[in-house]
Image (cartoon, rainbow, N blue to C red; front, side, top):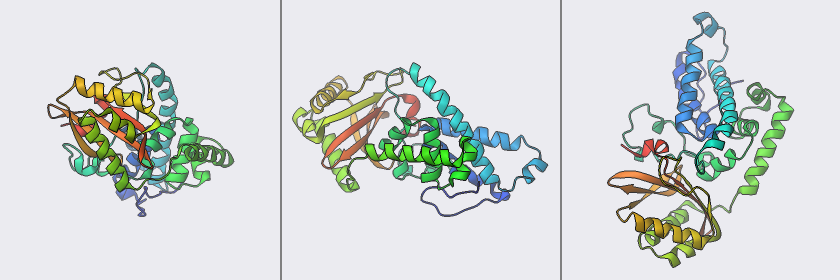
Length: 306
């Protein structure tokens, strides 16, 4: 396995002297595989712990440290994905990937924080991560390593523990899932307009306007993690979603809605007493919102709060 550049970055730096520079790529890989920044940080920490547990002689014997780190991180993620399916069964309500702000909006960011390390491209949009979440662990790892990080199937096989041919089939199956879930591409400027109109309609508690901005078969999913109040099951249908949103706004009249970038796309954050209490991501198809994800779990809002 050879070191590959991260999405959006064609540079390579496989040298041993720059071992810590691999952290950015590893964070990017682990976040895409796990959908959780906290888990991604833990994976990278464990990966480096295993590296430094080796003797200098063992480290020097490794031809490509970057490739070794990637292989180890990938395998840790694969194991975590397997156990995550068990954890999801006991999770209270719906599980939504952890939302990421634009690096300029990352509250309290310090030099070296993951805010400066996650590349926000099409492979971290909420819609994309939700599709990845529906894949088997092996499909997800094979697809992300090959299609996103451009590793060969022979290299992917070293992580997944299957033959290159099997990994090719896994990635193909994952690709098919992606295609089946894709909505027509909407220009980002138009997405921003739709989200802005949605925000204004929500602030005005205008059910009719909200219904007009939502696809008739739209789905809204909230993640409170059992730590805060949130709907436990998806809400389906434009009118049901609109009425629910207006009800929420009525129960919390002091909510302040802000336009924010969420996982690289136009989204919203709602603040109460200056603290971010919900982050919303959208899947806009044409002129209407097809999917809406609202994250309320405070453990997933760390980058959004002081």
